[in-house]
Image 1 (cartoon, rainbow, N blue to C red):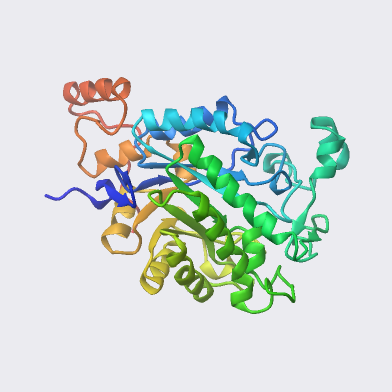
Image 2 (spheres, rainbow, N blue to C red):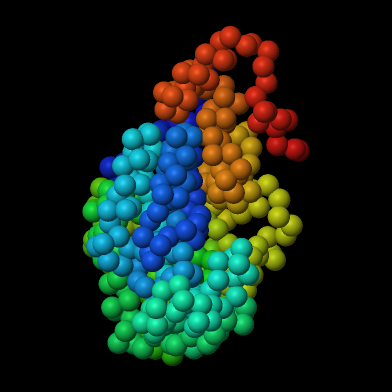
Length: 390
């Protein structure tokens, strides 16, 4: 009997994933002045030890003013490389491929952490946590001088002369990611952040060559891809995360068109999410239910002829396997379900009848779990429940 596709290795350029389970990038807001902390080591490490094939660390900002809040990871300076390299070594040591997402918040910046209310950070708070110079450097920029729908402060529109420098910062961050040892890089072009702001007619009202037509609004994203690829080795895969549907003028047809242009420039996989421009989840997706964003991955894969990654309330092993078997996506990304159960890949392998010796996880876990499985035949693990409803 062939192994489930979920646990079949996948080659991407010069990188081989041991399985198709991907840890989606999740903001932790736990950095100190942009530097990785022990929290990042623990958080990424537990997913690697849990059996995931690819662990993508959170959106890491390509410049200081691109930070969303005080706790964002940074990669705008070489000084950040050692802390991230420490995480890379740990992820690799436990059998997973290390990835990183690069991002820029644009106008969705200078905010409190979400569990602190998420509202705009006042000057006094930034000065107390950092200093006055940091407040002055935290310049909110966007394609156009339009505030985010959440009544955030008015950003400044990037001048035409500033755009090439902003794009080059993505490339330099990619160089640093390579030097840190990451093997997969994802460009964050979704969820209402800077690249998505350029793509969206809702946020981009420019009248130069970076605004107006669909192609002009795609220009910033495509030039970021080019800059990243110029500094990211050819043998390493490049992902692009898109809000395939944002209910604000950017939708699947536009995402397909962008993917077709991005693929020959070196993008290998489209990470298919949604929302973030005027709210999330998107209204057109209907009620949030299992795999509600999978149709986006299916459409991008079919119509753009590019590999896609499905994400969004994929909870059960049989559901994840079905998505792959039906050819709806090439990779399965999980986020909050992995927060709930960091050992989800190991658990899914057991439920799908593979890995009887628990070889997916490190020996300190595998030895004791295999021993228990042999000794206690009637025991049911705490994570076992009926398969996905319906």
